[in-house]
Image (cartoon, rainbow, N blue to C red; front, side, top):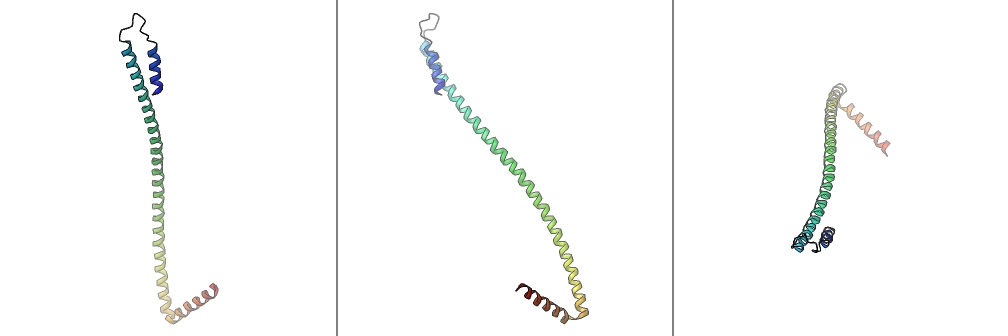
Length: 131
């Protein structure tokens, strides 16, 4: 703003009013020129500030956009992983059902006491190992 006002002032100094073909209101023209130069300089500076703010906004907007894309990709990977885990749970539940039915068959064949005895033996053996 100061540069623009200074330029207008210097250009106005060239109008000394001594030339014969200049209008009589030279001082008014010089004043108007200085004011216009000041306004122009102020407008240019404001435009520069707005350009900087716009550039910063575009950079931050781009970062948010890229982060949004990466988070969507991460969410879709997690959704696929959850689907896979749910399928594994179903498979394990089916396997558990099969093992339960085998246990019932073995229990009916051997009697409940032998299964309980084996369970106790396994429990004791695991306790010894963990000590």
